[in-house]
Amino acid sequence: MPDAAVAIITAVRESNFNPWGKKIMEPTSSAVSAGVAMGAVAVTSLLPGVNGDALIGAFAGAVVFALHAKDTTVVKRLVYMLVSFIIGYLAAPEVMRLSGLQSFTIAAFAASALAVTTALAGIEKIKSFDFASFWKRG
Image (cartoon, rainbow, N blue to C red; front, side, top):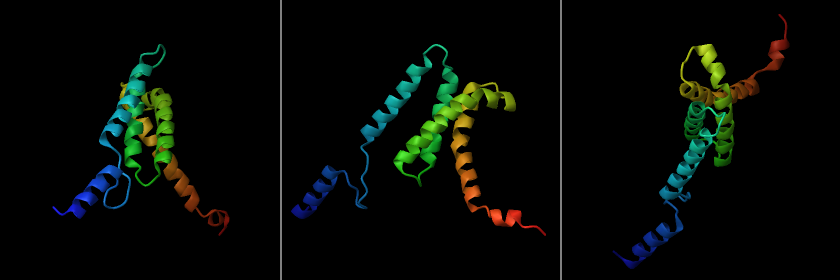
C-alpha cells in the first residue's frame, strides 16, 4: 500500500472521523454509558418506596423513544428521554387502572414510550391549526 494511503487511513482512525466528516462515537464509550445508566436504574430500584418494575419499564420506554427520535439533537433527545422516563414512571399506576394491565413494567414502558411522542405530535398539530377558520361562521 502506498505511504500516502497508509497516512490517510491512520489519520482517519486517530481522529475518530468517518469519511463523511461526522464524528463517530467509540463503541466502548457507548457501552459504558449504557451500562452506567442501567446500573443507576438498578440501584435506584433497590431504594425503599421505589417500584423497581415501573422504573425499569419507564427506562426501557425512554430508551426506545430516544433511539427512535433521530431527527433531533443529542441534547434534545436526552431531555426528552428524561421527561419520558419521569412521565412513564409516574403514569404507570394510572395506565394500569385504565387499561387493565397487570404489570407495572409494561404499563410504565407504554406510558414512557408514548408520552413525549404524543406531546410532540399534539404540538405540531396545534402549530399547523388555522384558528382563523375555526372562528369563521357560515
